[in-house]
Image (tube, rainbow, N blue to C red; front, side):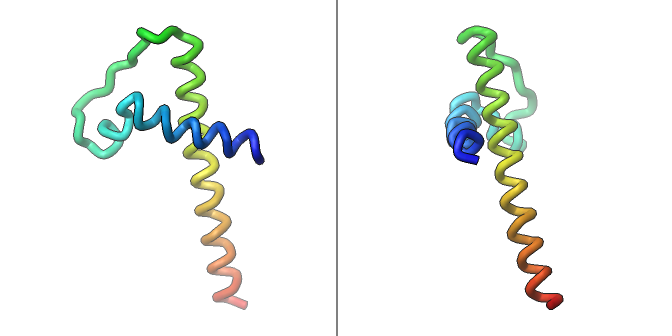
Length: 73
């Protein structure tokens, strides 16, 4: 879990640095793929962003599961 968490923290940086948050919050009408830093860094950034959302959703689901389990018990 430590490696995935570290990848998620880098995903936060990549999400902000790439400007993807503007597209996700509908502040930017289109999103262009910026490949000026190279294909490897581009791929690593997007893998980190995917890990960020995967870890975030896993934590949300764990919290919801605990809430409804305690509430129904």
